[in-house]
Length: 299
Image (cartoon, rainbow, N blue to C red; front, side, top):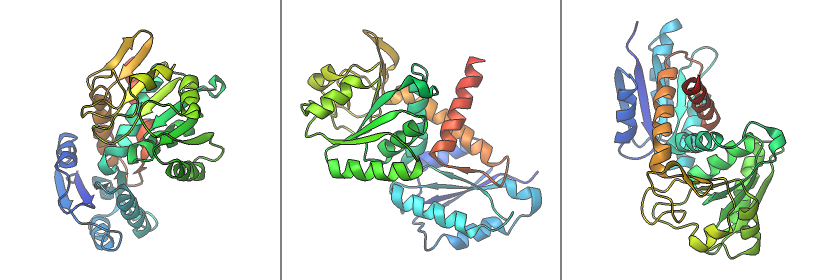
């Protein structure tokens, strides 16, 4: 069997060391790392991966697209897929800044406690910092599972733009956009959304408080997930290490508590890239992998 070669395409000048280490730990034999990749210069790299092997051997070559600029990485991924033709292609994983694997892991964690797969449940969720890379994907994944999602941002206009994009990806999605001036959730609409939601996920920038003690008092959620690992907490009272901690009937997850699941999804996704030359893994595919891992764990 040919060696498993992963072509790491990163939009940053220096390819991510984190992504490289995970790739090696997931069983990649040869890692080819390229930085400064753009949609304009990626085609030659893709052709090099496509035309050096044939038939079943193509499954032993795969592409990982990453980088800190999520929009740029998505453009690169689109250019990669456009370069393929017919059966001449390789599998692709898109996970810029870990946004897709992190969002998938957060939804997997919430699904341990909430009926996300039951459309009759009428589940409502609030995504704080919903206009960032992870927030947008959490919103998309939750909407895809049938939850009614309120996207909260400091800019109501940006929140509305995210809702419009998600509706394009998830027809019929139930979405609301709200602006919040601060972490105390003093806006009546925001407080009302927090009071209805069964799930609140904080996806803001590192070290930014999105829901303080006063704001959290407005929440009646069954599950609170804070994806910020840098103090202060994104949601007051959640430690980064919290993993399904019961706090008076509310289940709490911190960034590190979700991180173990994120790593399992990331590694399994890389392993699966080499099972076929047809696979394209975006947020939805990664969530499906996470759900399969959960099911296997409970079997």
